[in-house]
Image 1: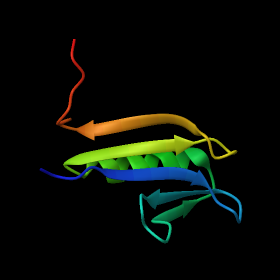
Image 2: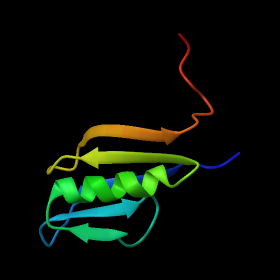
Image 3: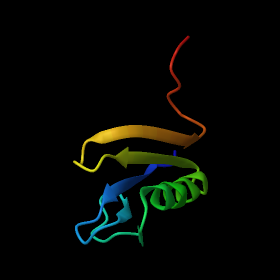
Image 4: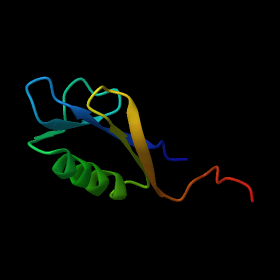
Length: 77
């Protein structure tokens, strides 16, 4: 079974926003606006068998999450 690749959209310490793959030591990409970073993270996640985007607020808390691909554990109901 494929492991889910998770990309985080985070505020960059130098200003702007960055996309960072979970457990990576460096950012995948840096962007001037949050919208650009979200768009890039979604592109990366959609290219995976199982992908997820976690979008953070300016203070670092989680704003929202999006998952892509066939969920191996879909919710019941």
